[in-house]
Length: 443
Image 1 (tube, helix red, strand yellow):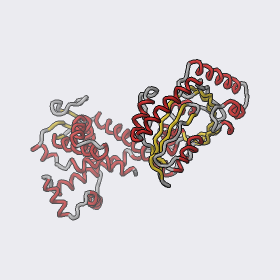
Image 2 (tube, one colour):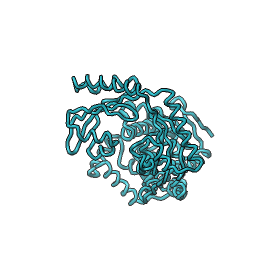
Image 3 (cartoon, helix red, strand yellow):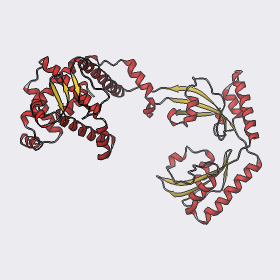
Image 4 (tube, one colour):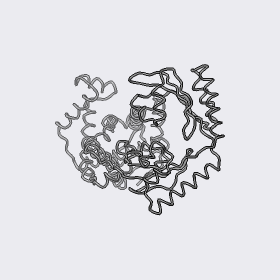
C-alpha cells in the first residue's frame, strides 16, 4: 500500500459522509459538538456510524444487526475522529492549501469508476436522490483534498521504516507466516514405556473383542472404536474417516505401511502390535488418487513401575551425554524407536510449526549441536538434539508488505499525535446527552 493510499483510505469516509455543508446542517440537524467556530451534527455522526457498520460487514463478516450494534457502541471514538478531521480541515483552510480543478476532477472520475457510475448525469441523480447537489459534493471533495494534502505534507515525511524494524516485526509475527517458520534438523532418543505381558494381553483382548463387533457390522467401526478408546481418552476421535493419498501414506511408519499396502477396499487388518499399543485399520475406498481409511489404537496401560524404570534409563543416558559421550552412538545403542535407531535417531528436517506444541516448546530454545533434558510423554521419554537450524529470509515482496503495515501503524500514531496538538489549542464542547464520551473537553 502506497503512503498516499493510506491517507486516502482514512479520508474516504469524509468524502462520502460529510457532504452536507455546515450552514445547511445547522438548519436541519441537531448540533452534538462545537469545534471552534464550527459544529458537528447528529446526521454527520449517524452517517459515519453507518459507514463503520458497512465496514464491519464487509471486512469482519458481521451480520447487519451485529455490525450496526457494534458501530453504535463506537460512537464516542467516531465522534473523536470527526472532531480531529474538522480541526485538520480548519488548519488546511487557514494555511490556504490550494487544490486545482484538475485534481478535483480526477478524484470525481475515480469515485465514479470505483462505484461503477456510468455518466455525470447518473452521478447527479444519485446525489440528488440522497438530497445532495453536485456542487455541494464538489465543494466537500475539495475540502477533503485540502485536508489530505495537509496530512501528506505534515505526516508522511515522518513515516520512515528501518530494516531493523522490519526484521523485528518478522521475528514477532513469524508464527503467522507458516512458510517462514524455522526448520530444524532433528534427532531423538526414545526410551519407551515398555508394558508387561499382562498389559499387552489386556489391550489385545479389548482390540479383538472390538474386531468381532466391527466384522459383524462394518458401519459400526467408528462408534465401536470411540467406545473402547474413550476410557483412555475422553475426547477420543478414533474411527473417524481419514482421506489421504498413496504418496502421503508413504510417510506412515513402516509397520503400518506394510499392512495398508495389502488391504483392499472394505478390508480390515488384523491387530498390529507396536511399542505403544494395538492398532486396527480398515480401508473404505481405494484408488490411484485417494485412499479413505479408519483406525483405532488400544493403548497399553502403563504402571508406575514401568514409568520409573524408563525414567531412570533416560536419566542415565542424559548423564552420559553430559559427560561428553556421542549422541548418535547412544541413540543407536539405546533408542526404542526402530524407525530411526540405526540412523542415530535422525528425524530429518522439520518445520517448527509442524511439531506438536509441547515438543516445539522444548525444541525451540535448543541451540545448534545441543540437546534437551528427557521429556516425558504418554509413550515414553524423549531426548531431542538439534543438528542444524534454517531461518528463511524474507523475499523483497514480503519485505515491502511488512513495510506497508509498519507505515500504516506509524501513520495512525503520527496522525493522532498531530491532531492531539490541534485539539490542545481548540475550543471543543460536546453535548454529553447526545453522545456518551469518556472525555468532554472545553477550552
